[in-house]
Amino acid sequence: MNSSHPPKPRSSIVTVLAAGFALICAWVAPSAQAFQIQNHDRITRDALAPLGVDNVTMGQILVGPPPGAGVVGSDAFFADEFRHIDNANDPAAICARTQEAWNFFTPLIVSGAQPTGPGGSDLVDGPQARAAFGGLAHALQDFYSHSNWVEDNIAVGQVDRMPPPLMPTCDPASLPAGLHTGFYAVDSDRHDPLGGCPPGGPPPGFVECHSTLNKDAWDTPRGMMLVPGTNPPINHFDLAAQLATKATADLYWQIRNLVVSDAGECAAANLFQAERRQACW
Image (cartoon, rainbow, N blue to C red; front, top):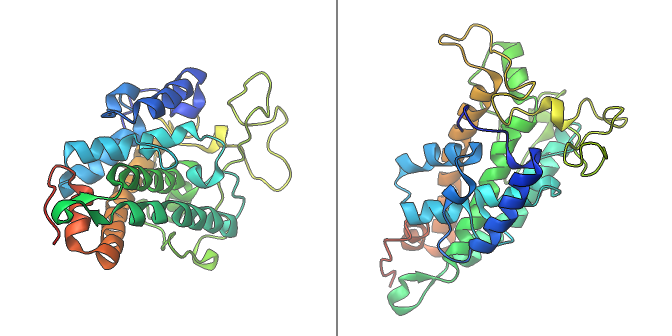
């Protein structure tokens, strides 16, 4: 995340089109710089670079082929609720979104991470597996910016608190009763086609709209609010980014262990180090 850059792609037609264009370019040596520096990009790099993820792998995690599409490329699918944990008005709905994301992306990861080729030094579809990991990471990161988890942490005086497991299993009873994400529907306001909020506010059953709740950037209404008692001071956007970075690092180990259990340590190492290409048999 970088507080000197604009809100995430869904907030502008230009950047959504750029994300769609990047999906086409993803088939040939994708680079996150095609999107410029964005919030999901920095979170992902901050989380994974210290874990030894190489540059080629990082690029494929950020932008890759659909349906995974990567951390940044996933924003082109702005109507998919499970990719962004949108329209979840209670803990049960949040759990439904996170579990749907897990069930959608992990089969792509596991199937693509199977060793193949001479000596098993290749993967069946490494770029797809990495892009799917990126899509899953995007969904997890959006939990922190699209829900009121940060606000609840501040209310209970535990700003660094991480949530209980959100995937592959998720227990609504373990989450705060008032936890929710914002309402978002494409073209719900003809004056702001991508704003996602009806002119009269969210429909019955929803507390607020994505446009007022999100902490996608430092200059959103909620993102710019300061976190009381922090020194040096940080805002809601900064806190959401910090928690999302830790969650992304934790997800790396969760997925790596999943691949190890299914395809072996060698395949898992090759998945997150594309330049390694070590023989697995």
